[in-house]
Image (cartoon, rainbow, N blue to C red; front, side, top):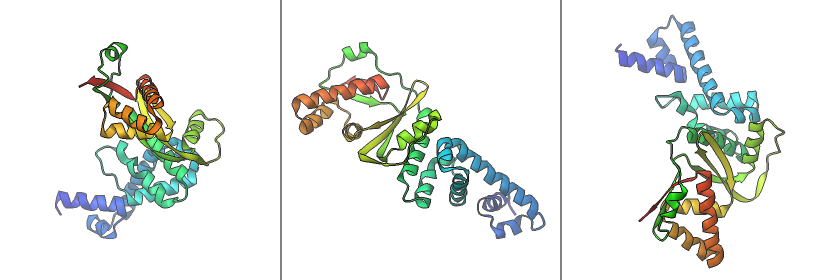
Length: 250
């Protein structure tokens, strides 16, 4: 048996408990092999618990462990670091709990906050820079830590209550669709629930980051005075919060 074959069989044993791989490795050492597999699975459960602490608290230890075991069975580690292991956990929860969108969104919040935390730094925009901008040709640059998705439940309120260790509200559907965004400002990760207008503006700027295009879109939807005012309000809010970290002319 070559080293590559040995490594492949050991991987198959750890991830699927392959009987064929176990026999090829050493049929006499099944107890020792089981210890390795138990350690492997326990380590991955610990990784998911560390990545999703508020989700763990929300689901409870028993249901979270069931979800973790299901995920481990379906998704072996795929990256060089275990920090990336929880990336697909939301998909497992969708399959296990298809009628619990609050759980799906809560999982997204936790993972996106962790991604925002390790995203590259961005300096932000100074008042001096803004004073020199030609707004007819201005282009907006978002923080590399920005993440966003549609939302239909009060998962943001659930996460905030769990994070602050206060009474957690009941899960409920929102009265109208919203969206969730996460990003990092300085060393602090942020979570915000935004309305559909702001979410549409963020999405449109990902395709065309000209501020003039945003103004045109809002004017077409809201009228000239209201649209221009809304564009200015959004820009001021994004710059102040660190969502927009660069504005360039041309």
